[in-house]
Image 1 (cartoon, one colour):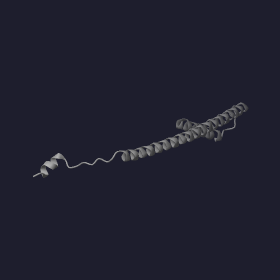
Image 2 (cartoon, one colour; image 1 turned 30 degrees about the horizontal axis):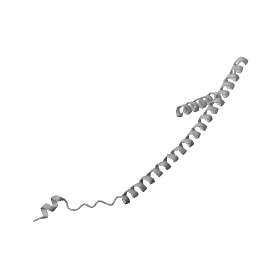
Image 3 (tube, helix red, strand yellow; image 1 turned 60 degrees about the horizontal axis):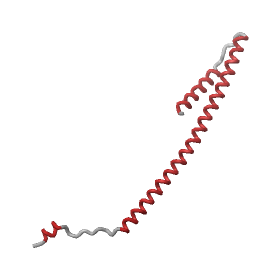
Image 4 (cartoon, helix red, strand yellow; image 1 turned 90 degrees about the vertical axis):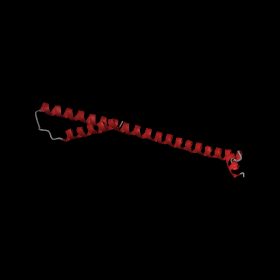
Length: 112
């Protein structure tokens, strides 16, 4: 999409430069051809600007949609983390902590 937008901008800028360039006055046929060419350039410029506006509007719409999707996913992750934390707390309180006494090796070393 960025490539299309850049190409449209380049074409509009080129059309504006060519349209604003001074032309030598010629015969009536040359002037008519020049006017037709200038009209075609104006139409092309208007079409390119319309396409560019459509692309920009589509981009804005999609970016807003993705922002909402990202926010929804972030909320889902936060909820999952909260549920996991609550589950860890419940599990820790449900199972009494394990208390290890002295190991058999330590007891044998300490026995005289």
